[in-house]
Length: 365
Image (cartoon, rainbow, N blue to C red; front, side, top):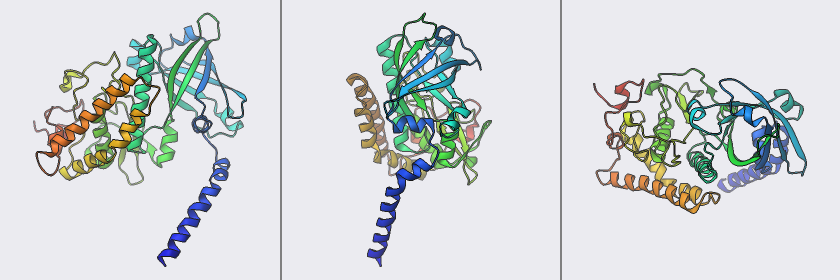
């Protein structure tokens, strides 16, 4: 009977694998997945570049996205661009962007209706510094993806920014797309919460929140806040709890951009100082999460090592910072059987994120 069951599973898997290409064709693919499936990494964006640098708020401007597809045909897409990111808009030479495709255009070409995508662009004019920053943040997203599907898919691009007015020279820079919120929502079978603030631990998926918080601790990021939904998207699960999905890691020590400043209100002296900002959990929950991270160590190290577009020095720095995290976990083990929430909080035990309740972080006041 056991042998028969194994054979049935084998044929089911084999048949499903055989049908997969046909199933994918029958379903509407997103433009994001299309770029990834076609392995399209070289694109052009043609627009008024001088005007693009002056966009504010919800202002949009027309542009054309073009690329050569897998059939060696040039595709042209009319899109709209808008600037995003309040802080980066103030300090960056080039703004992070949002790309808006036409839903009618997507539908007429047989694509799914996912139309809005964030584009993480270079910030600094210095080409080497800007390249390293984009690639380091892209790699950090890859680390997150290796730990949990509750993370944004990313697609790396090298973009030629072409001035439609022919007044500004063409710039070739690295950037990467994030999958749309709606796409992530449908992939995880959850529902995005638009105005979710002030959640308590009882309302949040404990395992998902703890994993996210340990990840932020691992990469040295304090630029997030669950209570205020800062640099987090929150999604309702069918079971009624909330799952947080993090984004924007430029202020983390793992990325280490030149404009990142330490969060002194949280006890950071440098951005490399790790401060744990997760909800209080049981010691058993914390140990389970840390053990999971340990099981993923080799995968995370390889994600950095294999990012050959990064300089050898950048890869070395990222791996060293990762190793410091794992050395820290080993040190915590020496103090007892289970590594605890209080141990993770020992660098800043009284710190509470803005707008949060102290008791949710084990702080009595």
